[in-house]
Length: 320
Image 1: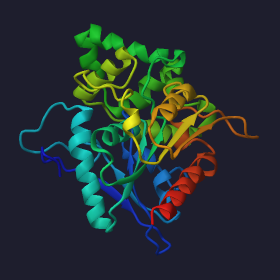
Image 2: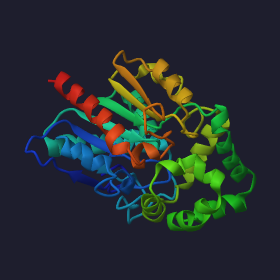
Image 3: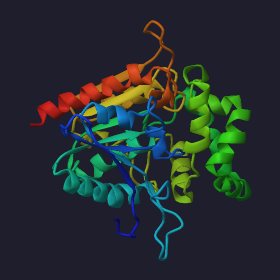
Image 4: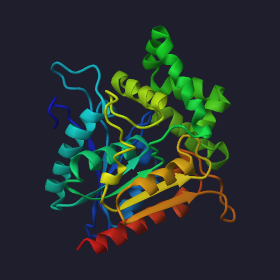
């Protein structure tokens, strides 16, 4: 529960091996729900980590999935700061209490990674043992990210912005994204995702974005860096405050989080225990990973997931 009485949904995945390892909280991205991280048996980072012995908690961020708005006087909009300062501490405390572990790891995909950066910068990482950030840049000025600036047109037209906010996930998945190849390329490399999984992603995982979060995203794109909703705090400039172990995961072909943007995070974080892994086509038989491919790509289970699990196991062993 948070200060506004939001009920945040957590899906717990138990390890089948009897051993309860490090507790890991999974957090999804801007336009997807928690199902994105647990789509099916063969395309699920959540299940993979549970099978590797971790105590996995798949979070639905406020306003998505089963994390519905409060029944009484629900707010119509919120910022990432409210999620960073209210929701994340509540989730960490709950997982600590239920798991009996004083330390947990935050694993965030895209938006989830940005929330992780923000929490570590604003709270000194209270309750966390480390951070895994997947496809989560803090700068938005690389040429490959230029198509994102198209969203700024929403600021010029209130009617267009209202229509955009009213589009639900299924509509985006069934009609808009498949009809716009350039838009589709922003989210994934179509050659690196199976048609069946692509269909399931577009049909079941996409969600609308909250107006307050959209405004903050637009401000961030306009500024070229991840900033607070009021624009008075730069998360990019405060990365040095992050002192906990950090694993950064990126894709060679990711247009939303190109490798250069993640290298900027790697160089700026204050932690000495930091690792950057960029997945691409250099390996024989591998494809260039786009944004969503890092989770749902054809070989993500064989190439990306083991790297994450291995890093967590090393952290788990070193934390005792």
